[in-house]
Image (tube, rainbow, N blue to C red; front, top):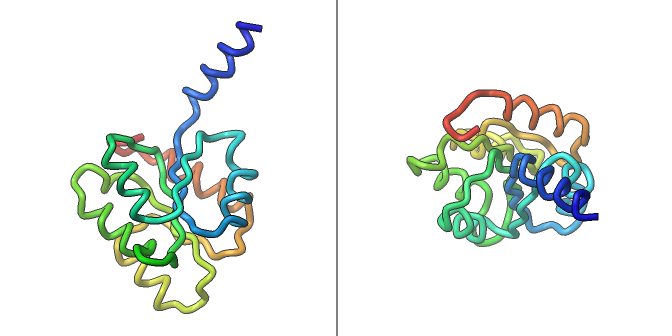
Length: 140
């Protein structure tokens, strides 16, 4: 019994941490279902919550953020993240249901590494995560 618990703790510690920033419960549930087996997920419902969590000294291997959220949207979140000397190397995947190219261009102009359209293909998302986590950075 103790061995099994210890093994679970070791597995959890070895998983890379992904910060997910989204205000849609259905998307959060889907991301949890798709990614929780392979990654340690930290869920925040706004860019403000995510910045606060990061400022506590946390450094995820990757961030997945919705582009459109109230108050402090994904674009503002990425812009603030990338101007920071400490967080700028964390790869960011933007998710959005927006179909207009202006929204996509705005998010990518702040140096997000990837953009995935909602609804997303879980396999495509996993592939993109693996690709971004395999690129050497000072964070990974």
